[in-house]
Picture (tube, rainbow, N blue to C red):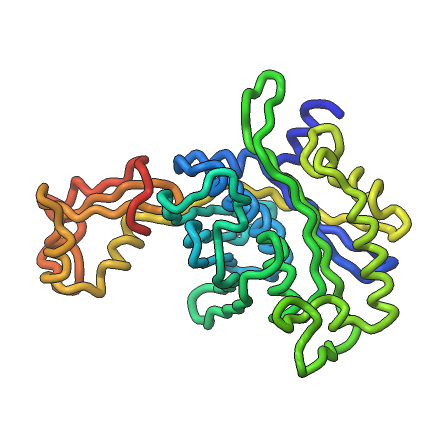
Amino acid sequence: MSLGARIAWDDTVLPFQLDQSDIRGRVARLDGVLDRVLEQHDYPAQIEALVAEMALLTALIGQTVKLRWKLSLQVRGDGPARLIATDYYAPTEEGAPGRVRAWASFDESRLEEGAEPYSLIGKGYFAILIDQGQGTAPYQGITPITGDSLASCAETYFAQSEQLPTRFSLSFGKSTEPGRGESWRAGGVMLQKMPKASPFANPEGGSGEGGLLEAADILDEDEGESWRRANILLDTVDELELIGPSLSPTELLVRLFHEEEPRVFDAQPVQFGCTCSEAKVRQSLSIYSAKDITHMTTDEGIVTADCQFCGSHYEFAPNTLGFEATEGPDAKGAGEDKAAGGRAGGRA
């Protein structure tokens, strides 16, 4: 494959359908997106791996939702990896890229050298939030942390909350290519069985961990057979096929599922993107009184805020903030409000 063809598939999500199995899916390839997400922070390697996996899941899931604004994934645990949060913003117009951002909160003093990244989460929950924008009520679904990966948490979420059998096969890590140096690459396939009838899961619980639902609890015999067949075929994929530069997503689908008659649709480009801004920070601080703002003011006489996702640093004149502000944003003294790259601190 030529270099130009390889680059064309970087940072894209390709939708497809297996016509013989009534299964839809996505193939994702991320490289520049992960580099941009992870270069904002100096994460330990184990935390980088968790953020990379979460970002890849977010790109795959975000493209499956009829989304007008934002899809968020969040994992909270009682282990050293306390929080992993990602957002996927829908394209603003036809042909525009979707945007992904991600960050993590962790207790470095509790990180165990050599521990598997997923084990650092501990007990907690996996959540998906869909926000379709102004005038709509956000939807949130939550399932417990389960299985042996973030991908298995997402599979449990779809079985339990949406009753849609779902499977992910993911690969991610740092790679070195001639002329490019070291960079992040990630690739993955998502399969999702679309039920022909209403789910009929056992009201007494499922066969999964802790009584959670699994695919076998949702599908009838015929659907279950086609689902198992597609999963067996997906089991044959290797890491190089998912992330390597020599095999395009369309070639991968033919190699894996040619008997299932794969049909592809237009690929969706994705890129790193953050929506923080001075106006949004001001809006978030508008609920505070002048006394509250005083407590936030530094010894230098300014209020600061840092975006966890992109590292942008904001500075404000205290008298221009809160519902008791005495000056507008453009007042003298507020002109030094700015956004500049910096280490992430408080969330903007």
